[in-house]
Amino acid sequence: MDRLYTIPEVGERLHHGRTRVYELIREGRLPSVVIGPRARRVRESDLAAFIASLDDDPTRRQRGDA
Image (cartoon, rainbow, N blue to C red; front, side, top):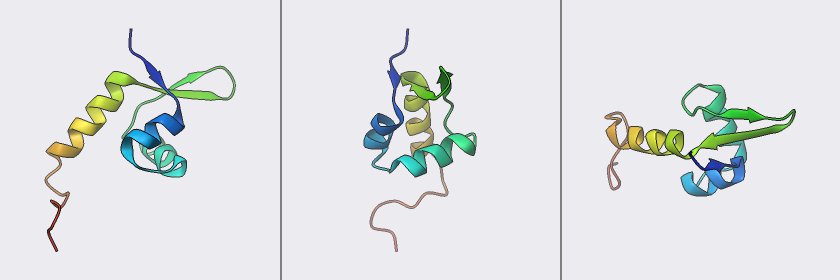
């Protein structure tokens, strides 16, 4: 069973704020699950897949590119 990360934990892993994490979820780029009426979590495997997809994205600039 995957670990479930809170939104602030996901933000820490991605070095983004809570608002950006919610944007990624809303855009459908980062899957999440709803637990209860007000709690949302991200599966460890979904977070890992999202991070891996960033490495595969040819539109992202490499560090040092101007």
